[in-house]
Image 1 (cartoon, rainbow, N blue to C red):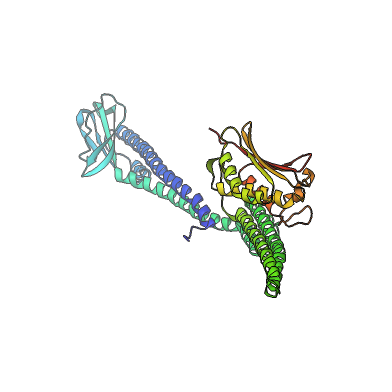
Image 2 (image 1 turned 120 degrees about the horizontal axis):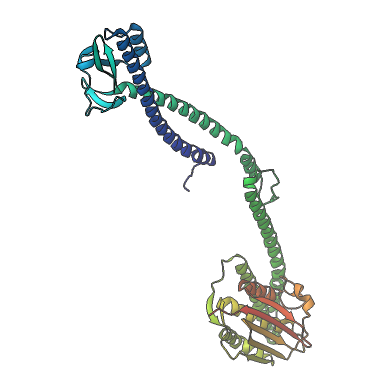
Length: 453
């Protein structure tokens, strides 16, 4: 048997795997957000640095920028900042000698940002210009300030790593909580397992241990199954007991007849005892056959239903039992319906049911039994089979006793299994069986659904 994951591991994975996927998406989003944040912060830093340099140039009239501004630029940038200032007429004022050149120059004085290459490194550049007076010169002063893109990227990575560390810590904490939380949550199931382990064929009591709502349906189903098993065991034990009791008398009779036959003194006595022995053996064989039929009905799988004509099955069965009935000087008839009665049925079981009904009439018809009649007809969407006799009769109010296994209305030669077998067969075919009121004798009616066309 292939081993599957434990319930604890299943719940753990069901919770953690989606959260891990979501945390990966969250980490990716956080990294992108960190990059945008770094871009905004560093662009603002460049703008602040550019404004500070422009102010110092205007104040010092191009001499230099103050040390204070240098310190502020260096501290605020989060990385090295480069700058270049030109005065009116493109005169170099201060800063690094060769600034990154933009692809196209802006036509206005608004600050403009662009990406460029400086000494083989990608940089972010801010270029801003304004009209100023330096000495006796009046014109446009251009401030170019730039910063390595790698510094920005490192800042963004640092922000993302902090977020990733926080998410990872939360995931680890959540994994620990879920792992041990599931273990605690499944504790009632271990208690349920202990309760089930206490059950045995001798102890099939209902489980009454408190369980979570999620498994209450399982417990209810298990309790129902335990009840069915207990009922099945009780019925099986009762059947074995009844069968042993029913077989004891025929076995004793056979033994007695066999011993008497061995000690027979005359040929006439021997012939008579042989006849009685054969009759007793046939009854024992019939009883054993009925017992086996009853057990097959109880434990075999679903009946193998095929489409067949009820008239044909009943006719064949009547032809099989007719010689025995006629040998007893009884009238026997079969009145078939005018149309075919197509039903879904197991031919062997259905034939057994008809045979048992006829045998029941023979066994319990009494000394005044003179006629056995079998009839089939269609009533609306059902096929109806009737077996009637003019014997002593069976009142409908005694149906519960008559259909009970080993049930007998009065002591007789029958086994008390015939009608019980018939009832099981009929129920297996989705039909009904009933004892009809009759002014004389017994009438048993079986109703089976006709196959839909």
